[in-house]
Every structure is written in C-alpha cells, then in structure tokens.
Length: 336
Image (tube, rainbow, N blue to C red):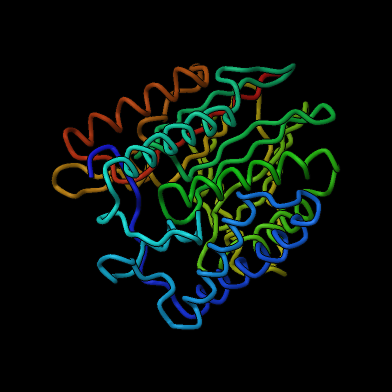
C-alpha cells in the first residue's frame, strides 16, 4: 500500500493475547472509573462498548482476526491499538489516508524528541546521523547534560514501524526522567530495564548503550546487548568490547559498567545495526571492517564531518539497494 509503511509481525501467541487482554481489562476499569466524573459522555460510552466487544471476541476465540477476511491482524497494529478490527488489506482508502496522516504526525513528534544537531559543551562536541528506513523509526538517540557530565544513549528497539516508534518514545521519556536522579550508571540502566520490561510485551526488547563522559576524559558506559562502540584516537581505531542483555529480556537483569579514558581529540562513535547490516545489490553487508576503514584517520575531523563521511561511504556501498533498516550514528568528541 503506497505511503503506508508498517512492519508485519507473526500471528499473536497465547502470551501475547494474555497481555493484550490484560490491557483491555485495565482500560475498561479506567473507563468505568471515569464515567461518574464525566456523566453520560458519548465518547466514553462508545469506547466502553468497543472494549467490551474486544473482550467478547477473546471469549469467542476470534480476537485479533480481521472482521472481513478473517486473517490475523498485524500484531504491530494490535500493540498500538488493541481495538483494531481490520487488517491493512481491508481498510478503505479513507482509513488508509487517515493512517498515513497519523504516521506523518508520529514522525513529526519523533523528530521533536531528537537532540539538537552539532551541539557542544565545555569539553565535548557531538553530532548524530538519523535516517529512518520508513516514516517512523525504532532507533533511539539522545544527549543530556547533567552536573557537569555529558550522558549519551543510542539504542535500537526490536521491530519496525509504529510499534517500534512508540517504544522508542517510551525509552526517551524513561531516561530523561531517570538521569536527573544521579544514580550510579549500572543502577540507572537496571532501573530503566525494569520499567521497560514492565511496560512492554514479552517479545519486545531494546539494545542500547548508555554512558557518560566527564571533563577528565573518563568514559563509563553500560552495553545492553548493543554493538560495541568505537574510539577514533591517536593510537588508532579501537572497538570497546563489552556485553550485556538487552533491555526488556528479564525484569531483574543487572548490568556491568565498562570504563575507558579518552585523550584530547579522541572521538567516541556509536551506531545501530542499520550501519553494519546495510546491504548492497549483491546482498553483502557493509560490516564493521568497512566502518572502521571509513573512520580510520579521522582524528582531526569534527563529529559532523566524520558522520558525513561515514554516511556517504555507506550510501555508496549500498548503491541502488533499498535501505533495510533504520540508520543511526553518534559521534562524541572529547576536547581538553
């Protein structure tokens, strides 16, 4: 369907159904509580009827099936709205146009959550590249100043489309709320993992790196199942190997911090798998080796120049092949 870009998910599992049913029961309770406060509100009555109808479909075993073709509705759309009753193939043109408008609005909201480009502080400068594969993205990037340090986060939510973009917004809100608490970094990520796990379905997760840099060039970061970051420095280009479970896998996961020391002029590079897994026409991946070659010798480049060069090389490698994933990169340069 032209203009509407949604990722397709497999038919819902019993666990998936149980979570959606619990969400509907919670919504029903909230609607009933709101009723006495708002009187005979027609919108509340309509929503309550729709929730009751959805719960009735659970009892009949027909929840999640399209009312027209009776095939499973895209799971991603059920996550975004558990009241939907039609699959994409059976929506009218008017409904498709309305969905397209919603996607465009979501894209604008998502752009508003991105950090400012080419910003700097007393001892650092940073920039990022952000290229969604569709209208909205599941990649997450942020830079936050806190008590003289600079915090940075770059992540990738499982899935694509609207569902992934909602989870990306969820992560943004969580870290923006948690970082001002001045928790130790491992505790910060552990708290974020617990909140994310409790607010998502069992098959949803996010890989990310969360770290901070201080004026002495001391770098601390937690890697939650994400690709290792790279330091572009005077001693060469080095990957900072580290490991950890993605956010959302287990609610009680713990995370270990890794440390490094940046010298003046060094740049920390973070990236999503849309970089290394970019395909060309021959189905070859760009890979980590090509990325290292792209940034090697870029010591004197600023973050914006380094990223521009990387994105250019990835584009030249991909050629006319379609972009198969969101591409996000962040370059953080230490200056002292």
